[in-house]
Amino acid sequence: MAFLTTAGCTMEIITPYSVYFNAQLVFKQLQLWRLATNFFYFGSLGMDFVFHMFFLLKYSKALEEGTFHGRSADFLWMLLVGASMMTFVALFVNVQFLGSSLTFMMVYVWGRRHRHLNLSFLGIFSFTAPYLPWVLLSFSLMMGNNATVDLIGMAAGHVYYYLEDVYPRISGRRPLKTPAFIRMMFPAEDMVTEPALVPPPEPQDAVDPPAAARPGGPRHEHAD
Image (spheres, one colour):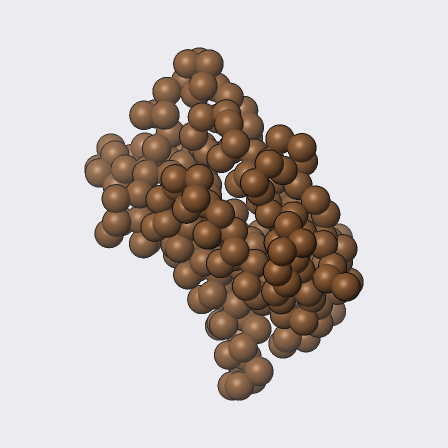
């Protein structure tokens, strides 16, 4: 959907004005589709689009096949909770598209759940996975992007991580427990046991970005 929406706007099949987030249009004219469509637009088809789409797909897949394996309901609930938080923040800042924010939320949560995994940036310096969002933020700034959009995603990721992974360990309660009506959408997973309060990180090899994003872009691999 993100590629189709972005490509459609680039080829002028649709206009960004029909998909951007606008609180007045959403709540007064009930153009509710804008709550979702603003996450699907990543600007023009260029380096920035490749950059964000690569990391969104990579780390969303890593989470879904890793700590959310067999827990599609929980994964969907995480997306809904994160999207709700980012949309709420967007009401108070001048942000119309939150696709990049969603990318950084996925990267942030993945990094926190793999805090002992070593990565490297172009072989120049090494860092652990929790610092990956900050490295990507720095690269995004060098590409001329607005830091506000990316920071919104990181903030949403931090709130989700704390309420889902940290707070339950402290209090024994899970305030973000997936509602029953969400679980009903995935009946085949009814027999899946409740996850541990702090899901252990799964082994995950980092992969180089595609060729289109490689020049100047961050390369991810295990540090020696």
